Amino acid sequence: MACLYDAMNTLRGRPAHAASPLAPPTSEVIAARKALGVSQAEAAFLAGVGTRTWQRWESGDVAANPLKWVAFLHAVGLKDNAPPPPPPTSVEILRARAKHRISVEAAAKMADVPPSRWCEWEAGHAIMDGETWRKWLKSFI
Image 1: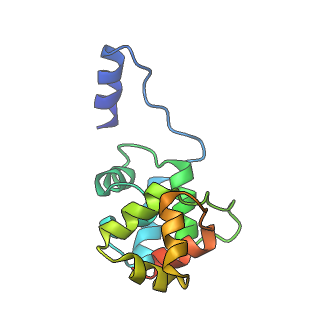
Image 2: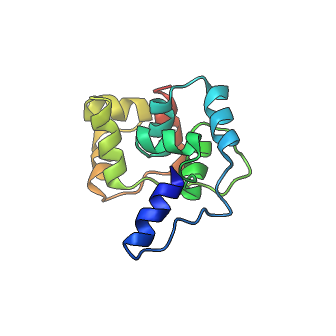
């Protein structure tokens, strides 16, 4: 399938897709998800990508985004020596809460912070630290 995308990009005058040398091999993507015992949709959520994107990572159609991969590894606690993931954006925080259909109060309680602090994170007035984000995401596994 990757060849089809490369061919279409060539026809459109765009450069062919080039995988990052930092991208994990397909076998590592599959092994990490199976080791956790989560579905592709759950793994995709933890990585901050769509389910179809995760499926394409596993099938080898596209290489995994190295930044999203590192964030996934940190979210599930699989890689202690990797660089710390970037803090979540306010949009990521809001979308994650909305996806699970929970109130601000419930989300704040799960993160062990006051609701006003959660609102500051969603509004972008404060930055949630990566450790809090990782713990909050793990509560859905």
